[in-house]
Length: 387
Length: 252
Image 1 (cartoon, one colour):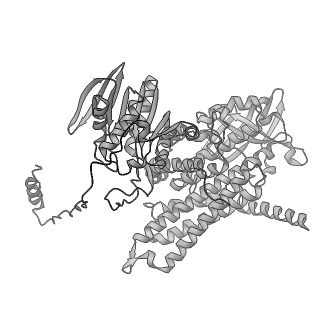
Image 2: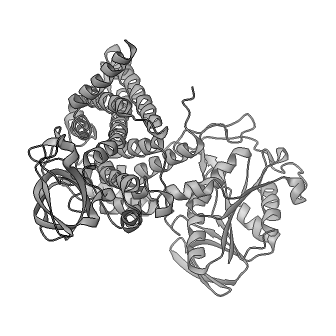
Image 3: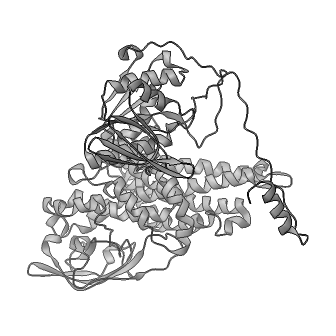
């Protein structure tokens, strides 16, 4: 058992840590509060190759291992979680294209997405369907060499900046089981009948837009069907979400670590009753629990990522990591706020932003309760096999 | 054009510093590539991108200084040379200069780029020593560099502006932090750096005598702590008092 990062993983960590410290942290509070889009940060991330983090080398990416992938999201989120959102679903779209795309689709889209010249996201959730993806109502009806798409998607990260979106649709609404009638269509911005609504206002997770997208008799060529075969869409999307859970877990570890770091700094420096509050056991108990939980979440995340790297089915591992990391992140953000007292509630300190950002990770990429049911199903299956 | 950039691994400026018993800096702490050298590497890379050629990093230090070279390679430099020798422990500026000069001479570069001074030692003596030993013109405190054929033109930072200084290459320049904002490495750059050459050489390989440092540090004194400023309460003639303070200080 070896918990050390490889030299290359450590270099990735150092690079992203320096980038977050130099280019994200100094502007995070002001830009987040004012709702300014972090265009300059996006430009730096393009130059660093972060948009190609899961794109194979032959298409211009760096296809890093899943542990490195988790570390990228942790380090960025220590400074500003919203920035991680710009890379998150984009990287999942590239992973799906690399894994399931036809050779022609990979050549056509991956090089532009690897450099960040073209941007993407993933369009799964609908106003009436989130956890129950099989209940979506966006339909794609075949018409000659095209599909005609009608429906709406919501909470689509990067929607306004996306040049290309994989969109989960029903190509056969009568299929049984229902997922056999579901497919992913790669829909390009500018396609007639495709429009992006206004940005959704939200508690946290700012810096990257979340928006509704609409499809009205939107004509999409058949060659944009991911993988060239109907009925694979749900399985393609769900397998990408295993990487998605690792990136969400990484973000949660990052925000939780930032909460701990700020709480530790503050507790050592803030005086009450003639001494630093760090001298009081009530504070020590909180800090010790936070530190233990952050490290447990990090190790769980690396373990889940390592399972992905081993090419295993990892819904149990990634589900556990995402569930635990996001829950302790919410807790850490509240504890950091309690330790900061009134200052923690003020927008002059980062802790209030961490507190607003933390719940996203418990909701996005499969709610924690849905993941609990996934974990339980795997437990039952293992139990059946034993008895 | 062939460009050599000298680089040094230094204690992390973000960590607290300690001294060894011989008053040299403790180097068992977190170490990083000298931030000033990152500016030199960036300038080297920009010149290479504009004029073609090669950027070679040369460093003197213990085995782990390889990490500092590797960071420069992941930014885009082509290869590195690490001078490592037990006889170099505690080396002063002259011995450092002799070792670096021998390694650089073997490369016959068109341009040598150094930071103005290192973050830790801050003597600023190594670049002039190198220029002398290599027989190169030295153009110091460069905040802007232009290359035109074999002609080199730099804007040399001064206290109240800059001078324009020219020389024929080969030459040595020292650069200030204003020269260029260092780029971040890229993920691919980090991966590629692992297969780039870092040649390790000893003093014997370079034909340099160890000799031992000519300089020892006799004593160390802490910098004077800054005194708190005086506060003038406004009792109706604060302006006059402030004017007097400024006049006494010969500011106005």
